[in-house]
Length: 219
Image (cartoon, rainbow, N blue to C red; front, side, top):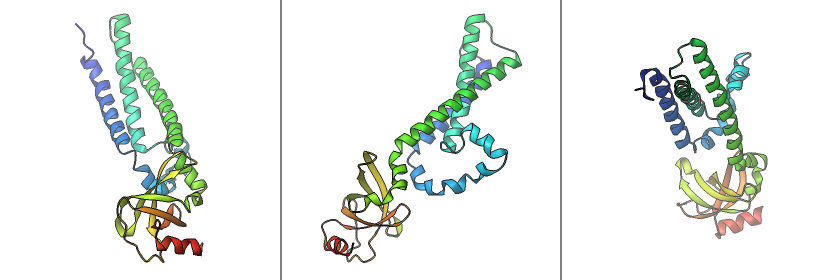
């Protein structure tokens, strides 16, 4: 009696499992791109290399995190190969043994993987509309309030603000206003966004404080 886990299928199963594990890691670390997005153009200089760049772009490099790419291709090739073997056996009662058949299976896997990459790239842009909008109109956060989500090193604060344009909660990175008298912040503090001091960096003061009154008088 044949089994879905016959030796002829084990290679595809292993490839699919490895791809699935990489995809899970990519999903679990999905919050990281916001922290490294500023360096994206530097990291993707390889896309500007003649011949190599267009080929990598065709495979989806630059559209989604590289870890997602490393996972989706083996996962799709393994899944399609395994499924194709089972369907072939179900229909012909034997497993495919010809090289052309193997290449067709791999080609179908690559095509499907590229399709999923394209869809994921589009969804990633939609899900991160607030990031795109923040780059387009970063000044729109000035003058609104937010809540400290985390106190990072070197005085950096992670602040959550409600983005009316993106209709979602946006995490931005802030530093205490240079002229503030009270620069001690804790998680949960309400803050007032004073100014844009660098790309994707804002200055803040405590909400409803003397420092806020001073900033409103100065600006």
